[in-house]
Length: 104
Image (cartoon, rainbow, N blue to C red; front, side, top):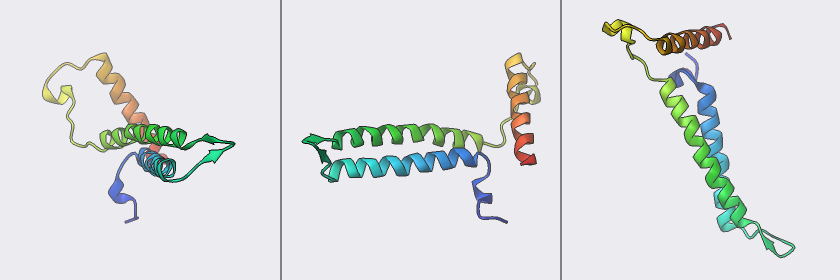
């Protein structure tokens, strides 16, 4: 059992989300508490806004990681419904991603 087994699927999305949170939090803190003046211009606001954008971007990573770890969803076919073209496309894409992950 390795260290990352508990994280299950979508480890890249998890790394992205954590990295964006760390960078965004650091930029926010530096922007708020450090005096960043160059030639009389204050760059603190730029870091605050950049940090906020990075933290918001991390939400995409968290949503991808969370949704990629949902297990136990049943397809319409298993529930007795006729599958649609969108369902077949999503299923085929999911199989390709899982087979790629299992080979690497």
